Amino acid sequence: MDAGVRLGFVAAAAFNLGGILLFTRAFTNRAIFETDPAMFSRPACLLVMVWGLAYAAQSRSWRAAPALSAVFALEKFIYAAWWGAWLWNHGGELAVLAERDRLAGMFYGSYGAGDAVFGVFFAWAAWQARRRARA
Image 1 (cartoon, rainbow, N blue to C red):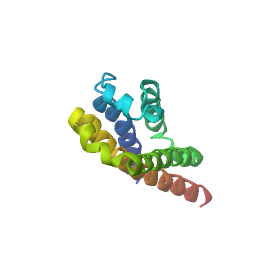
Image 2: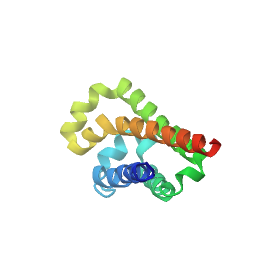
Image 3: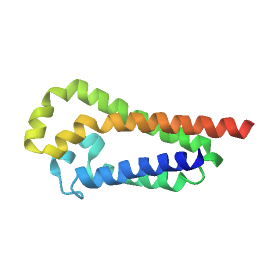
Image 4: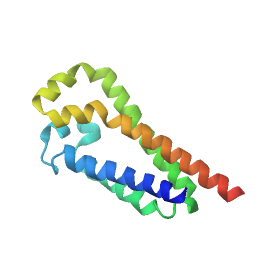
């Protein structure tokens, strides 16, 4: 089980690091930054990558700090909720965005689903670590 949980943390890190590098085309894709600058400006995307590094750093010590995994879960749920609200308000604009920039359209059409999945994973990891600490 530990190897699987470690892999989950590494996958979350890859999701953040690789996702930002891919969809922003290594920070050159203006469509990403201009579509939702409150959440995905260049500096904010850099911080998304820092979160990814934090997930990777926690991958081998997740049992020792369940509260940190809970913080990761909260962070992911905030991104998922922001995405849901963005889709609610701007979902009709996705086709136009995808015509302008296919990667930006794909990103804004999907990023929150991945964040929700990893939010559930981090919450589960926090619960497992806390449960094992009490046993």
